[in-house]
Length: 376
Image (tube, rainbow, N blue to C red; front, side, top):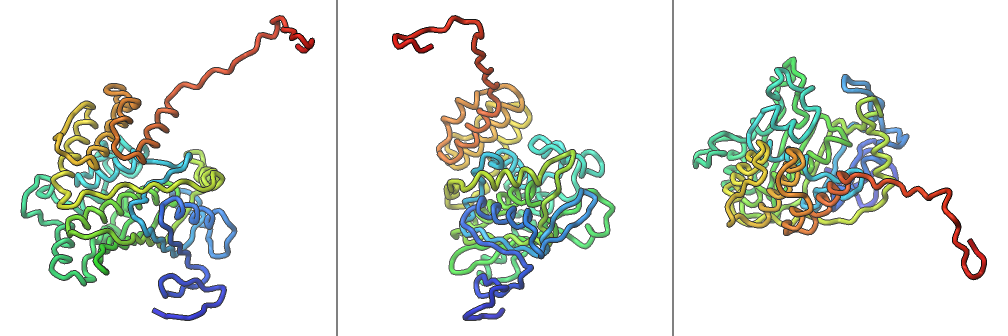
C-alpha cells in the first residue's frame, strides 16, 4: 500500500491506494451511479479496454475492476430500462433456499437452462455451497460455510479469515456448462461495521453485475444483523468485467447505451433490515416463496412478520400473480407495500402489461366546424 500526497494524472487514488491507468475503479452511494460509470467505460474506446472472443460471444472487457457501493441498501436500480426487483429477489431466495434446482431459478430467469449439465440442476449454484439443509430446517447445529464465517467473526472481530470460497479448484477441472463466476466472499468488521468484498473471475456488466450486487449486499446485511452490527461498504471486484456485443439473442450494447441516455435517476435505498437474527423471518419468506412459486399465490404467512419481510413477500406475490395469471391484481398488491420505494417496480410492471391505447384516427370526411371568426 502506497500513500502519496499527490499523484500524476495517469494514476488514480482510492483510499490511499494507487492504481495504474488501466485498472478501473469507482465508488458511489448507489447502484445506478456504479452502472453508469461501468457502461461509460465499456462503451468507450479507452485504451485499457480489450476485445475478447469467448464461447458466449464477443465482448468489450476491462481486466481488473474494483467497484465500491458506500450505501449497500441503495442496491436496486431506478432506471426505466434497467430497473429490476423481481428477478434479483427470486435469485436471492434461490440462494437462501440452498437449492441447485434448475426449475426453481427458471421461474424467475429465463435462459438458465443453457448452463445445466443434466437439465435438472446447476453445478455452480451458490446456495448449495453456502447453506446447509440443517440451517433451512432451523436446527441449532447448522454446520455450513455461512456459520463458519459468523462464528469466526464472533470469536475474533478483527479476523481476516472470514472468507467463503465459491469457486473451487475442482470447478476448473470440470467439464461443465456452469462454472461459478464468483470466487470469494470476504467479510470483515472494521470500526463497528460489517464490510464485504466479493471477488469474481468473470462478470457480465449488463445482466450479471446488478443481480450480483443486489444478492451479495443482501447477504452482507443478513450477516450484519446476525452479528448485531450495522452494514459498512460493499466492494465488488471483477477480474473480467465485460459487456457483450449485440447479437441475435440479446442487444446488450444497445441497451447499455439506452441506459446512459436516460441520464440521472433518483436514489431510494431499501429500508434497514430489522435488528436481531433474521433467519426465522427468512425461513417464513422461503416458505411463502415456495408456495407462491407452486401456484398458491394467496398463501399467507404469520401476521407478526415484520413489514420489511412482508414487503418482499408482496413483491414475490406480484410476480407470481402475473406468472400464474391468478390471485390479487398488481393494482391491489401495490397498496400493501409499506416501503414507497418498491412501488415503482410494481407500477412499472402494470404499465408494461397494460395493452397499448389504439391511436385516435380523425374522420377524414367530417364537416369542418366554422367559428364566429370564420376559422375552420
